[in-house]
Length: 166
Length: 286
Image (cartoon, rainbow over all chains, first blue to last red):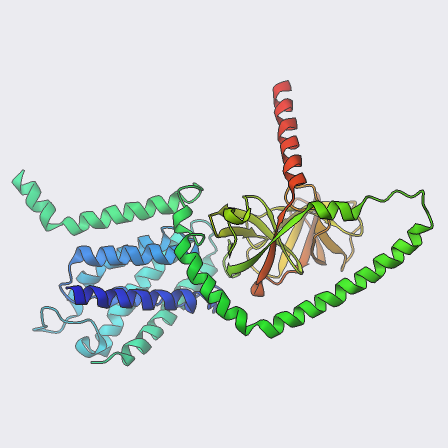
């Protein structure tokens, strides 16, 4: 339990710092940025307590908001995919899956992991950029942010996933 | 009752979900509330510290370019000094001419040097975080400038960090004049190119030409007159056809902003008080 908490905390800090220090400064296609912290939510294993996923995603969201001066935007969208992640994961598990199976390419297979990750990322991007657009709506900008960010994020997550040990 | 309890125990994570979403919603829609939003902004201590480390690192890598920029600036200033010397020599002969005492005026202004620890140019509403706060004498609504020109206005102040509302924010309206002809308008940004801003409401009869300089007017109680803003690139008609809309190439490069100065002018506060008093007495007359 304590080991798991420390592990998550490390992931939290590493992914959060990577986002704040490296990826927030990237500006590809006018506003599309890789949102690597979504990986933190995707990684939760099967049967992880749902309240813990929700709290982790909320805290991650507020932290990211703090650094980009967008209070509530990332928090609301991350909490939403935090709530959806356990249910979506159930749909993609192989038959006779282990009760506490990890969410990774090795356990789910490339295709299933990619689909799961992309669904969560695209939901996140749609919600995130739509809430952000409340103050300033420009359809093309909104679309390019959503498509660009979701593709960049997926590519990055696949790259990180291939580095992860089995 | 037992059923209700059983229901809550079974689905309590949904309850948590809704509570967290409501909290996010409150943060999202309560952002205009200045006090309430303080702790989720980058003027908060943790965010400020992390950004400070990052900018220290970047600063190290950009030292060469900065020294180059400083040298250039030095040359420009030396040229200006030369011009002023000539002007001074010419005017010494004419003792009856009245000159406002520029030196005295400048002495009154206090500059607080600060470093930019967070900056962005890609959003429609950019904000800049600097590493000075109320402990260093910074207050809300003070002007911020850099070596090349205007930057923005202090928007939020914490103990050691503050957030600046730069020209590159759609909520920024700064009163400016055209240096060569003294006509004035206000500077806005359209949320697109970080090197271009627009001067709105310039009267139709104003004398404007390309490459004229735009500077602050000193009408607002934030900036003194004469801080350079940028050069005129093009002149358009405003949508209602009643005034000109002037395209300005900003002299400040917001993409690599590092050292700025916060302007602390006691006489400005005095003028603001006087203004407020005048408005008060006017409203009493009505």
